[in-house]
Image (cartoon, rainbow, N blue to C red):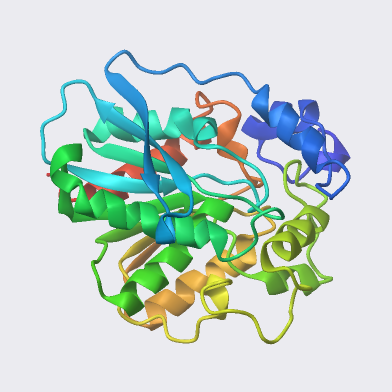
Length: 316
C-alpha cells in the first residue's frame, strides 16, 4: 500500500491512486469547470424520467433551472427531495448528481428536484441561497402541477450543496412560510473557520484540500475566512441557536476536510433537541462516493441515506 494513501480505505485505494490531486484557485477555475463539463454522464435507469424546467428567482430578476427526476410510474402526490449539488460554492451543475438523484427516485418512488443555483465568485453569497429559497417557494406554490406533496418535503445536498441545504433550513425556520420534514446533509461544507486550523492533515484527500477550501469559502463570502462579521445564513456553523430545525442525517468520511466540523454540527443539533443521525465512513475522503457506485462502502453509504429518507418522508 502506498504510504501516500496509507489511511485510505482499501476499497478506495484504486480511486485515490488514479485521481489527480489539485487545488482550486482563481487561475485554474475556468479549466476545472471545463474538465467537469467533460465528465462521463451517469447511466439513468429505464424507469426514471428527467426533465429540466425553469422558474423565476427573487424579484423576478433571474431564471433558475430545476432538474426534475421522477419515476415513470409515479404515484402522485409524491414526497419530494429538494437537492443542491456540491462544488465548493464555485463549480458544479445538477447533472453531476444524476446517479444519486436517480437512485433516490428509483428506490423510494419520490420526486427529486435539483437546483442549478448560481456559483461564486461571479455570484457570491447570498445568490445561491436566494436561488434555493426562490426555487423552493416556486415548488411549493406549484406542488399540484408537479405532482408532489407539499407536506412531505425534504432538503438535501452534498458538500457545498449540503451547506446550502443547512443554511436553507435555518432560513426557512426563521421565515416560517413553510417547513421541511428532513434535511439530508452529505459531507456538508458548514464552517469557514476550518480553513484557519493548522492541525488538519489533508494529505489523504484527493478531491478537496484546505487550499481549495479556503478559495471556495472566500469566493463565496467575499471576505477572508474567519472574519468576525458575516451575513446571517452565510456560514451554517456560525448560527448559535439550532433548536427546532428539522431532523437531519449527516454523513462524512473520516479523512474528509469537513469531518470535524460535521461532527461538531451533529452534536450541536443533538444537544439542541434535533434528531440527527451521524454516519462516518472510516478511511473515506471527500466525495469518495461519486467515483464508482459499485464499491461496497459507497453502496452502504447510499443505503443509509435512503433509509433515512424513507423514515422521514413516511414512505412505509
